Structure formats: C-alpha cells, structure tokens
Length: 308
Ligand code: 13P
Ligand code: SF4
Image 1: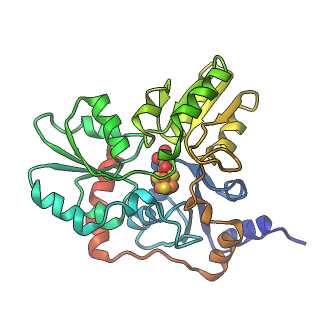
Image 2: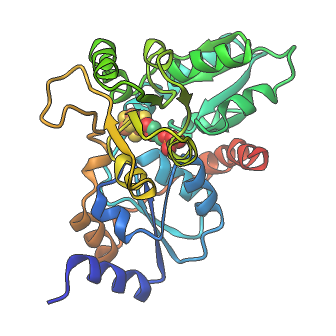
C-alpha cells in the first residue's frame, strides 16, 4: 500500500504543486518538501516558484507572503489556523495609529506580520537581513520597527540606531530559561550557545552566534566546535543534525517543565502530513488577499528582496 508520503509526492507531480517548508515543520513534512528554509529563503523560493500550486508548510504570514508574490498561483496552507504570536501582536488599527503619530518615520517591519501591516510598511526584513536593511536607511531618518521588540533591541545594539519598537514578541523564543541555560552550559564545557534574535536580550548575550534559522545551520556547519546549545524552535534540530551528523546539538531549555524540555511552536506544529495531503486533494485551505492590500504589501517585500 502507498504511504502518505508517496501519495503526497505523486499528487504534487500530478497537480504541478511545489511544497515549501520552514525548518520548524515536523520531520515528515520536511522530508516531502521541495525546499526547506528560513523566512528569507522561503520568500525567495516563492518569488521564483514555477508551479500552479504552492503548498506552504509554515505559518499564515509566510503563506501570505507567497501569495503576495504570486497572485496568479494557488497558495495553500495545510492548517489555516497556523498563526504566529508575533504577527497577532500587531493589529492593523493600532499600528496605523502609531504611524499617524509619527508620519516622518521610515517603517520597517519584520516579515512576521500580516499582509495589512506589510501594506503600511516602507520595507520588510527577515532575521537574516534585518541589520542590513536598517543600515540601508539614511542615518538622518527616524525608524519605526515592528512587531518584534527582541529583534528590534538586537538591531539597535548592532547598528546604534534609535528606533521606536512595537511591543510584540514570539511566545516560543521568550520561553527560554536563562538559569537553566547557564546550568546546561556549565554542565557541558566547551559548548557554543547559538540563538535566534527573537530571543530575549539576556539569552542573546550568552550566545557566540545570533542569526536566522539558516544562519544558525551554517554556523554549526562551519564552526569547528563539536557541541552546540541551540536556542530556537526545536524543529530546526532535524535539518541541523543531518548537516552535522557527528556533532552534538542540545536544545536550549525552556522555562516550562515540558516533556522534551525544549521549545516548540504550537502554530508551526498545527500542520501535519495528513493535513498537507488533504489540502493537496481538496485545494483548500487557500490563502486569498484583497488586491488593494496585496499591491501595497508587494512594494516593501520587493524592496527587501532587491536588498538581499
Ligand atoms: P527565520 O527567518 O529565521 O526562519 O525565523 C522565522 C521565525 O518565525 C522564527 O520564529
Ligand atoms: Fe511566530 Fe514564534 Fe512560531 Fe516563529 S516560532 S512562527 S515567531 S510564534
């Protein structure tokens, strides 16, 4: 009997579909994907996708970005409820109020936000290019950065720019326990701590490398160390371990006493192999964006892609 994976592979061929998956997706989904990457890589892949259907195995804002870039393609999200605490922290009406109060500011938004928020932005960034994008703004211009305050604080520290920060955060990256991390580090002499910039400042200060999910994978590949403590969503460990089969990777501990002692994004994990199969069969849940918003949101996304 054909396995679910085999059925998905056959179906995506038959329907001329491409599967794009984020590193935080469950292993089985990563295995059937045509491309696995970070937010920037996924946006770039979506921009050049040559398929009728894009199945986006990630969260809602990522699938929206793919749709903004591909208005004539069908974009499917296996679970339409796969949201993001950061994106949800920034409602369009409140964001507009902030922009109205600061009309002279350049508006830079982290890609983890809704299409409506992107439509109000001057330029979008991801964790891969945030520092570069902020540095590209002339020094005499004031900046609003939204929605992630932790990434925002990190950029301020890296660039010396004074930015107004939106008060949003990622529930997963704010769940790391500093005390448990230091204890783990002391128990593992020689370990290198690496962290995603959505983590809180005191976690980032312990890290020898701070970067996007793709950047973190590159770091463990190129750094000679054998032992790493990884402060980001635990799904990354699957691809990372494949890249460095002989190195030891330990997930950074979360504040909660959960069974795996690591942090998982419940939104990302809403997508399952079964739901991926079902969405290919049924042609929904489909992402649709009002054209007026899509056109406005495309401008800051394209500015980012041209800058990356
Ligand atoms: P990356 O851009 O590093 O893939 O991060 C995406 C994300 O949602 C992190 O929580
Ligand atoms: Fe959003 Fe955090 Fe999940 Fe990334 S890990 S999708 S930022 S909630």
